[in-house]
Length: 487
Ligand SMILES: NC(=O)C1=CN([C@@H]2O[C@H](COP(=O)(O)OP(=O)(O)OC[C@H]3O[C@@H](n4cnc5c(N)ncnc54)[C@H](O)[C@@H]3O)[C@@H](O)[C@H]2O)[C@@H](O)CC1
Ligand SMILES: [K+]
Image (tube, rainbow, N blue to C red):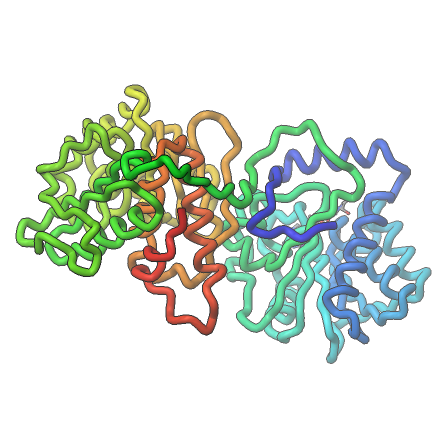
């Protein structure tokens, strides 16, 4: 069993693949082995989360997820803890593995109760796993709410109940996370994408993985965790030309700050030279706080040898420069208002898609609403399946798509597994952090990194700054974030 961190490199498998892996493994082992291993893993993790617990509440559901819970109860009882099981379901309709584990719990003299205990030190959620098909209701929903609000740690078995393990959507519609509740999840056989995007990260909390001794699989992964980028060593003989030119195009009247933030991020992330082509003709000719940024009129920049970062603070003015940017930029990051302009203009969409055919790398960085506009659907539709939405964007426009939000998704149209990023936190939910990310991706592209790798690395580093920002330090504003951009 090991803990998943932002540095973890691992393949992710959807529910269908997980079922196939489970069937193959179960067929090769004596009956009930997998569930006994799963229950033991739950018990071990429970003991390490709450070593001094007296009472452990285990809520068990009607399928094999409940079976894992019964099995854990038996194991905890044998080790001197006091598990109290509440069960919702029909004992006579339990699947065979779960039925056997229920019997083992009874044989171990585990206490079964109608209601959750008045006092407990840890709750184990074994209500629903990957077989969850509809929103939890009635007593099940009540118990989940109780776990959420009682303030004691919650350990989810396999997946948090009600979470769609493919998409990270919580069927109950709640966020599944109460600020004061510590959450853990031990997941079996495979890591599932839904644990790491949409509501998944909040609902699961700290994720542990146990392959139940099954080992590697030949199943193709659904997606992957890319882990920490390797440090990029700069040779002594390098010069500013070695790291390329970035041109930020944006900053319509009143919004110069967004373009300057992207420029500052590109600069700190290692771009050789950074030009900022402002769309505001009356903007000052120099940014005295960052004199390294070369301010220009957007229309005066020759982008043919540059990486353009287009859209930050672009307002509606950015539309008029987009045809030239899309046609001429050697590499391109399309962000914010540029995405909105493209979403409403089929000619710009065709131009965007034509860049791949001309071998010009392009990264787009939408948040869910911008993605929805590009796909002609709602933000709710995008959030309902973030991986699918990112893949659709990538294939429709021939780009690398970075779908922002909790568990940022990075997809391209090469057929390679989509990446889910595990860095970043709510500190990034402030104005301007998206401009910083666009600038960081621009710097990586300008340094000749392949677009997919550039996007994955910049997204990882951007989130990592927020993750490692000391709680005692000054608030992490976008300006500070840009200055921290590492290279
Ligand atoms: N069979 C095995 O060998 C193993 C099974 N494992 C566990 O088994 C789980 C999958 O088991 P199942 O396929 O039985 O699926 P679940 O235990 O997730 O639940 C399926 C059952 O819940 C019902 N259900 C779905 N949504 C509901 C809702 N909202 N309210 C009430 N009932 C609802 C379904 O009708 C079905 O009866 C995994 O997540 C994992 O925890 C692990 O122990 C690994 C080994
Ligand atoms: K569960």
